[in-house]
Amino acid sequence: LPEVEAEALLAAAWAACAARPSTAWDLSTQFAARASASRNAPAPLPSLRESFGGGGLAGSFVEVAGPPGVGKTQFCLHAASLAAAQGGEVFWIDTERTFAPQRLLELLESICGNGCTDMHDDSQEPALEALARIRRRFCASLSDLHSIVAELAQRAIRREVLPSLIIIDSVASVARLDGGESRRDAIPKRQALLNTIASLLKGLVSSPIAPSRSPDSRENDQRPAVLVTNQVSGDLVNGGHKVTLGNVWHHAVNWRLVLSHDHGGSSALHGPLMVNPQRLCRLLLVEKSPCTGPLLIRFSVSAMGLQEEEERNQPK
Image (tube, rainbow, N blue to C red; front, side, top):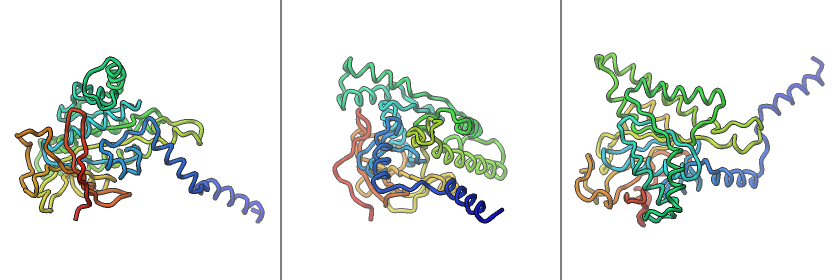
């Protein structure tokens, strides 16, 4: 090629590959628009919302881990209610039959009624409309979960509309129940499936919810959020705890929230609490985050969902 044509070809290639120039004001405006988008699933707690940059869970692969009875499902129910109340579609993959429509309706009536737990006609209708945007699908095995996630990934490839929030409660349940083979044969197969599922979920949070033909459309900036629950082993108070499912899964999520009961230093954290579980304080540790350091948040569970307590500090 002549030198002039070669330079023009290189310039066109660089223009196609390079990011568009943006000023700080452009980035700030885009971030504010993203944070206020109706399909952006909000985080349940104010301090947690701040750690997500003031916006929501959109574009994040979030793992909520903790012992049984600590509030992982309540976290998911609250997040689903917030997303649906803002007009987003929620897809709940239920592996433990924890999906609770009555609890969702209670939360939605509180959200639509601006925090009032009493039922009002003006909050019941929008609450029921929001409840209809939350869809549940039962999943009995790890292979079933893989098929469901692969189906969602195919929707993204075909540029079809995706839910704004995808919840898997819980991934540890099907990983534990799947099998029937010898341990030696089952573990490699389980890890291979988990690795594939993690890869597909990471791809989903990078896909637009409602792809638009216009490259400048704001709809192309809206990403789904993935929220999964998992188990932990070890001592959450004195350290040494470990989230289950192996190293590949450990590194796949970009947010890890570890929940525990606040026993004032006691290490007896495993198993559900038997005395007044609703108002006992719990702890949420932001253990892994792409944009903030470790953060410890005290909260309780009430009829209105997760309620943040006043005390909040950085873990030592």
